[in-house]
Structure formats: structure tokens, C-alpha cells
Length: 410
Image (tube, rainbow, N blue to C red; front, side):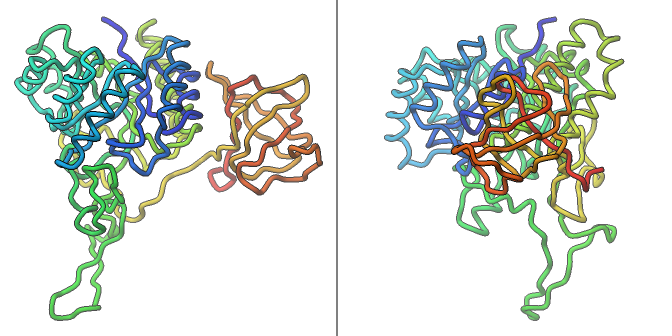
């Protein structure tokens, strides 16, 4: 058995570095155009070059998404974009649209082409179709069971790779092809502008009684009828490996560095433990569940992997995340008594906060003092993105994540 790749999302340079440092084998990012996460920060050309160089220095691959469904007006710009990719040299391109695929094959043929889950890849003949066109990897549709994926593995060439989602938000639409956003707001999910109407609250209006809103109920539990739980397969690494999956993909290019550090570190340890021994993996499952629950999430489900989802995979009474921890910042540099960070959320002198280390340790430390960029003492830091020097009872290393448990989560 070959150890599967752990593929982590990144929406910015900071998050890319976090993914690399916390255990990713590969990272996927989006550029300024042609990405299905237009509202993510995404990467400029210069940031992409810097991010790829950083990842490659740590033997981590970078894949770039170009997975919109293109219209005629997109094609000339796409040609130039793929010419640019030929110079930037990511390790792979993630593509949905056949026309975009052919342009990538023409203008940067040396870069691997991976087929996005948006392409609705549900059978082995589809996989072989893309393989014969020159695709290295296909991301299977999320609607497949592990048994179906295992059957695909048995019927495709050995050197063709299967990528499957292992964790993250689930789209209510088939293979992510949503029309709701475009219909309601004019912002097309298939061109990177999804407004997430699946998380909205709905009511029914009878045609002849405008303004009289009737709430939508399912078994009187609520009105968020499209709101799916999040996928989590941390307890099922052996089954994912047995299915012949080559790459385990985490969803979330709009997530924070804290989220990425948490999922990358937890799945990294789970995969490594399993390949060391199944007994070690089984003995650590409670730790994996505890750690993965420190990410933001909407309760967990195993999606389609073991059976067709039922009403139990939906959340009807709210659309909010469970959020047990708050991200304070990342250690930029340290000295013998302090750490320098760009602060993300408020904390105060006297607080006990947590240092989250890539090796799995969580270390508690007390905030002894806070100084701003000019060296002035501060009792607290309420303004986001301040450059701070923090004096702590235990000093983190460069790249460590600082977080604090939310009191309401206790």
C-alpha cells in the first residue's frame, strides 16, 4: 500500500505556509481568475511564485485551480493564463471544463491536469475517457460510495490517480453544480461567485397571498432545508486506503490558518499512525476526534461513502458553525522572552492561551505583557491586524499557531 497524499486548501500565502508546516503533502490554491472560490483572497502571480517556491523547498506540491465552466468570453484570457502557468510551473492544474482542459494541454502540456469533482465523475469509463485525453488524476464525484470508488480503481490504469474528499463542507447540489446562487443573486457558482444560498433560511409564499410567509418545516425541526453537515472521515482512514484512493482532499480554500493547521495536523497524524500500525491508529481515534472538533464545523457526517444520506445528514434548526477556538495569530519571529505576531482576534494581558505546534502538542502559556509596534504597553489588543510583540511564560517557535478556547464552548 502506498501512503495517500494529504491535500490541503490555501486561500492566501499565510495559509499555504501553515498547510505546508502542519503536514500537507500538497496544497491547492486559486489564482485571480478561473477559480471557483472568487471570494477567497486567492493568489496574485507574484504570490503564486512565492508560495510554490516555499512549498517546493519543503518537498510539498502545489496545484492551481482553473475549474470554472468557461463561456466564450473567457477563452482568450484563459490562453494567456495557461501560458503564464507554463512559466510559473505549479505541479498540477485542477480543471472542470473540457475546453479549458484542451487549452491547458496546448499551452502548458508539461503540467499535470487533474479533473475537478465539478465534472461529475461517477464511473470508470469517465475516468478512462479523461485518462486517454491526458489527465493524470480525476477527483471523483462526492455522490459515490467507497464500494463504487474501489470498483473504479479496479477498472482504470494503475498509473491513473483517484482523488477523494475526506473532510469539509458538503455542497447540496449534485457534484457542486449549483444554480441557486445565479438564480437568486445573478452570481454564478459555476464561475466562482457562489453566495451559498444553501445556508439561507427559507419560507413558502402562496401566489395569491404575497407577503404572507409560511415557514418551511421538516418534522418541525427548522427551516434550513439545504444545510448539510460537514464531511469527516477521520475515523475511516483504513476504508479510504482500501478503496485505492491516491489523494485525500480537505475542502476549504476560504478557511483560516487555524482551521487549516487543525485539519492538516490531525489527518497527518492519523494517516501516519495507520501506516505505522493499525493498532496505533485505532488507539488514537479519540485524540483525532477531539482535535478535529477544535476546527469550525457544522456537525459531522460520512456523506455518501457508506450509504445514501438521509435527513440525519442535514441541520434544520440553524446555519451556524460550531466554533470552539479563536485564532489569535501565527508566530512570525521570536526572541528569548517574546513572540512577534500580526494579531487576528482580541486577547488580554493575564489570559492563558494555547500554542498549537505542528508535531501535535498543545502547550498552554500565559500572556505576561503586550507591546505595539512602537513599544507601548497595552492591556489588550482589540484591533485586528496589529503588529504586536507578546511576552509569554512559554515562547513558541516560528510558525506556531496561537489560539484560545472560547468560554462559551466550555
